[in-house]
Amino acid sequence: MIETLNKLMTLFPQSDRRQVAGIFLAILVGAALEALCVSLIFPVVSILANPQAALAAPYVHIAYELLGAPPVRDFIIALLGAMVALYLAKNGYLAALTLLQSRFAFAKQSFLSQRLFRLYLERPYVAHLRSNSGNLIRNLTHEADQVIWSVLLPSLILMAEGLVALALVLVLFAVDALAAAIVCAMFGIVGAGCYRLIRQRVAAWGERRQYHEGERIRRIQEGLGGLKEIRVLGSTPYFLDSFTFHNRGRARYYSRHILAQGLPLLLLEVLAMASLLAIVAASLLRNNSFEMVLPMLGLFVGASFRLVPAVNRVIITFQQIRFCKATIDTLHAELGPWQEATSAAKPPQPLPLLHGLHIEDLRFTYPGAKHTTIDGVSLDIPKGATIGFTGKSGSGKTTLVDLILGVLTPDGGHILVDGQDIAANLAGWQSQLGYIPQSIYLSDHTIRHNVAFGLQREEIDDDAVWRALTAAQLDDFVRDLPGCLETPVGEHGIRLSGGQRQRIGIARALYRDPPVLVLDEATAALDNATESEVMSAIHALHGQKTILIIAHRLTTLEACDLVVRMESGRIVQIGPPGEVLKRRH
Image (cartoon, rainbow, N blue to C red; front, side, top):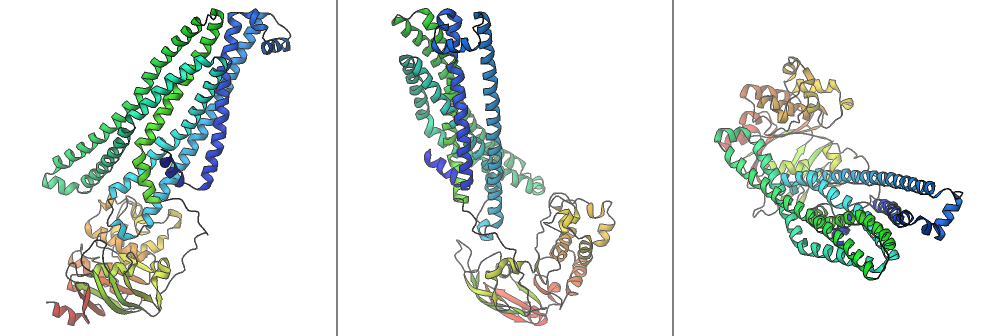
């Protein structure tokens, strides 16, 4: 368990550990207050049982004299009032401490989720090709919450309850060592036995719960993402049954975990009663008077009210940490130990294309693939040229463009912008690019926000939005909409036709007026007439922008300066469109 908690703490900055130390000190004060309140039960009950004898005790007599030796009844009432005031103060302090702990935990949950999201957004693109998005969503949402609410916050509670239990035990030993030893032995043996009995099972349940959680999210994504196909194919029962299986599996292991959490409390309550009876019996066997047994019994009853929940929470926390071991291992494997930034990140310096793009002996193989995808490609692209790429599916043309975009890192060779390798300033190079993929991602937002993608409302230039929409042949359509630029497009642009979604993507690429434009089958979803209009707008930029076009349609490539034909990851032909496209047939 210590190793698991160490892994958890390495996920956070060193400053957070200092905050934990401060919270620990506050918890220590709370434990002392708890012990003080419980320890006062003994003298108060002693005074109630035999006021005259109790007043002769040194500390009680001093308090009695300080109050001016009032009548015994008034003194007892004042003493009870002081006890109530002390408990109010103690509970007020503990409420503030609980707020402090929860705020700390909320802040760490936000920090952990943000760190994970940043990692997934900045992770190399090739890593996402091997990842399941359902597991990533699980880690970002449920697992990040789980590690905070089921491990970090309970660990703070563990410190508090452990210190309270320790303080109460010390008070009990100070009053009656034998009785305290009986209580500690019974609680300790049962508590340790419960934990050892189920700890391996709890860890296994946590692993199975995590698996079913990820699969459950995956089925939700698949079911909602392929809703139209599922309806047409009649595949609803398959997806529903699969979701139900993992949903029930998740619930099964959660219910076992909850049962394991509830059992110790039931046993501890029986033990508490047995301990009190054992204490009374032991006192009577030692010939203690009833006047002595009564205060001690009151003390142990008061201690039990706090000791039973404290021990129960300690056991539960140990179980939760075991249950969440797989979660912590997953997040630690994803994030690794926190490292302080050495210096503030500087904004990227643009890497403009002033003369030309030179590709030199480029090579790339996807991880786990048996064959090379890009094999020794060399190519020169002058500034302002329009270059088309064609070839059969799997020929490597999209991978080559992905390497030029910088979303993939070559295994060998170089991509040079005016002699400078883009790897040395990738962000600066990408700031010069406009990209139009075959499948456009649209967020569930307005047309304005989808064109000016990734910008806050106050950052958006509406004039630039309209220029981009005009270039994409979509301005008339948007002006006729009731909400104009404020019209929502629906999730994944479901309220638009395929052609309209594609032209939104083209407008998005043109919004920032990039000097380099990359189209990856960007007009595949358009009809011939619409494609002709869009490509006329694209080719109107000839000479102003460097344009790279991947396409299967011959009409899309006819106005290019050069067409590059690829096969098996190599360039097999470069030439004017008429020559290359003629030979293609």
